Every structure is written in structure tokens, then in C-alpha cells.
Image (tube, rainbow, N blue to C red; front, side, top):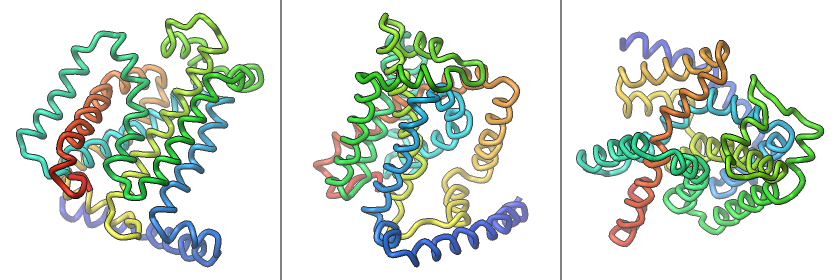
Length: 301
């Protein structure tokens, strides 16, 4: 097994070389260098770039985000959830067990209305976790979060989503935007308003993935630099163990492959099994809130 892990690192070496060459080229440009060198600028800038692309897709192809996002990014972002909220914090074994098992039980016992509310809320909770628990440049983080809130409100209350429905992609992988509206806004009877909620959800879900896969890992890295692919691999191996890493790799590959065969079924199964992580995020945020006065720094950083 050790040999296979070393081989995996060797496979990552060319990616690290390409990454280094790309960074060197980017840093040779003064405008990019000013953004990329410092984390307090780099993380918000990348999130805003991602948000811009997500906003356009949320208007013209929200169902594409709703299906493809969970299939490609669902498992990796769950791993990030577990790493930065359960495995890395200085928590006791009992606290970890209570946090994880409590999240599972809450997801299993929650009534359908609460599950729907949590589906909407947990996208925002991830942003709050980044701003409050991980980000040190709080002023910039609050400004970025306010921009996200403004964009989401614009999607809900303006005719943009209806315009996208008229001129964009109304169906992706068998999921029609009206079916998504029935799932995400079952109590809304106005079609434009319901479509706005679908677009807003797709946008915030995309931001949710970006926060867990880019912003929080960047903020949790010491110094101003970023981790190479091999360094990330070693960190995963250290935190998950050999068996956990193998299982994670299998799921990262298996879910998209199943999505090629049955995209909506795979998406539905994934979302059902992954519903616990919203409660996990709420529990971790509550622990941080209760312990914030007893520590000079976040227990997760």
C-alpha cells in the first residue's frame, strides 16, 4: 500500500510542475500579483470570480448547476466538511462523536418541512462559517458575503430568473426547472417567484461548494502560500488514514460515474445521504460560538 501511495504522489508531480509554471506566469503580471500574493485578497477575489460565473449560470441554466454540482463536487465538499469541522479542530473524542452522530440523527429524524428549510439555510451557514470561524480579514469577508446576499436577493425578487427561463436552458439531464421549483419552493404559487428561488438556491449552492473547496482550505493553510497537490495528498492521507483515503477516492470517482448512467437518481441518493452535513455545520458553528470567548483564536484554524 505504501508503494501505491508513493506512486500516487509521483502521478501528482507533473500537476505540481504545471501549477508552479502557471503561478510564475501569473505573478509576472502586476495586477495578478497584487491579488494572488496575499491571502486576504486572493480568497475573496477567487470567490467573487466564481460567484460571477455561478450567477450567470443560475439565471440561464439553474438546473445544470443543481444536477452537475452535487455529482462532481458533492463528495469532495463533504470531505472538506469533515476535515475542517470534525478531524482538525482540537475536540475531544466525545465531542467529535456527539457532533457527528447528532448530525446523523437530526438528519434522519427531521420532518420534510425542516429538511427543506435546512436545504436552503445550509448554503448560507457555510458562508457564515468561512466569515466567522476561518477568515482573518473579517471586513473583506463581510463585504463579500453582502455581495452574495445581494446577488441572491436580485435573483429572487427581480425578473432575471424569468428572463433566463424564457431565453435559457429550462431542462438539464431530465430535471426541468418547474420540477426543481416544486421541490425547492412547494408553497410558492407565483411562477416567476418560484423560478427566482430556484435560481437563488442554485447560486448559493455553488457558492457553498466554492467556500468549502477553495476558501476554507486556503484560510486554514498557514502563511500566505497555497498547498501543492502532493502536500494536499499527504494531508488527506494523514487525516483520513489509508483506508479512509481509499474510500474517499472511490466515492469521488464512483458518484460522477453513476451520474453518467442515472444523473437524477444519483443526485437524489447523494442529497439524501449528505443531508446530515447541514446539521454538522450548524453544530460546529454553535460550538465555535459557545467557545469563542475562551480562546483567542478559532479552534478550527
